[in-house]
Figure 1 (cartoon, rainbow, N blue to C red):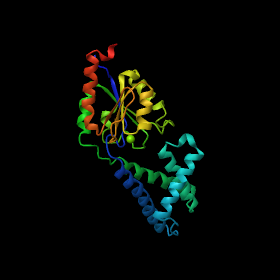
Figure 2 (tube, helix red, strand yellow):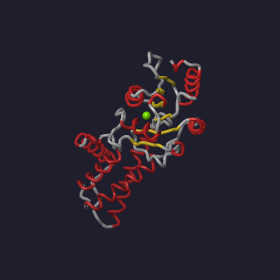
Figure 3 (cartoon, helix red, strand yellow):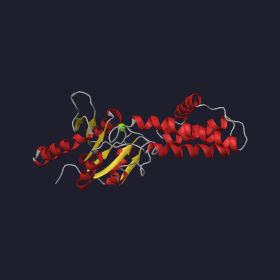
Figure 4 (tube, rainbow, N blue to C red):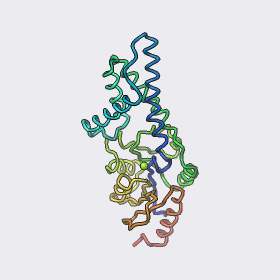
Length: 252
Ligand SMILES: [Mg+2]
């Protein structure tokens, strides 16, 4: 008998560093759009659109921020926000609506192509392969990476995009959804993530075990919460927990 039956994982900055890929995706898909539109307008002998990478990129960001305030339930659904912001921007610079919809969708296709080019930590795939023999695994992300196309997708039969559920973490909904789909009680599940607010607190408050990936120095941690500096230290935590459990510490 093991204490844990399931482990849920945050993705960004837990199983890979997200900063580089996000910066490349942000700049790359917008540059791709402007270049594709320039060629499209030239081929149709239409005037070039008044959009530059810098000013257009800033306007795109401001439109997303405004939209997230206007439609707060969509604030974590980043793909939706980007698509609507691009459609509105392209219409505002003079594209007919049908062309604006088409080019916004094409830009988001390029966004997702770039966004999945993450490089998992070298230990991640081996670790998940071992864990999957013993535990049910799930992914819970607030990000908008394409869950079926991300490089570790094969290890996560249950994968939840919390923003698209309109309930981004720290909302408990995506955790409860994962537990329900795994058919596991919170006390037999562990969540692993890098965000204290979005990963650790909600999981702990639901009664799950939690592993916080953080460089922060040791501080008093609430019950059932452990801290490691890197995902590769997870097996040590699991071993200690399971040993305590089989030794009777958790059976009182
Ligand atoms: Mg994260």
